[in-house]
Image 1 (tube, helix red, strand yellow):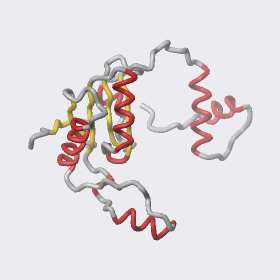
Image 2 (cartoon, rainbow, N blue to C red):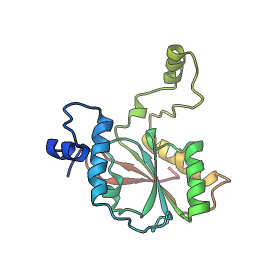
Image 3 (cartoon, rainbow, N blue to C red):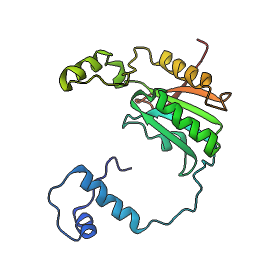
Length: 187
């Protein structure tokens, strides 16, 4: 399993037509895309997820959701942000996912060792002091990952915009073992 978009030097050179001895990470990603596109075949899929599920998860680079959940391309909608927090924008995406693209289930995945556990709302104040403008968004930091999963489940279940709130489940992904642990919404 590859853990980055490293390209063999000759492949990168062949795909761009020139030798690249330096460059940005974005250059590497674009080069990797050119290699990918060479063998790409349109899978002929619809935008509606086959499993009719939307997964909301943290953006943490250690979470490979498709592998961890046994998912294939086209199986689900994946919505990621810092902490996997259910924000207004997540509700927006879930609403579109359900109402326009027929998803019915929502899976929420937080994880152990999340960076939001080390931040506080003071982060917003520090940003304001640095750039001269207070962010309009909340940091949504937390100390108890299980409680944050419960809060996220509650936000989904009580949203007036979502049609399907009966199959909403929350989990904590252990970054050391790869296992999911389900969070009881009532605890």
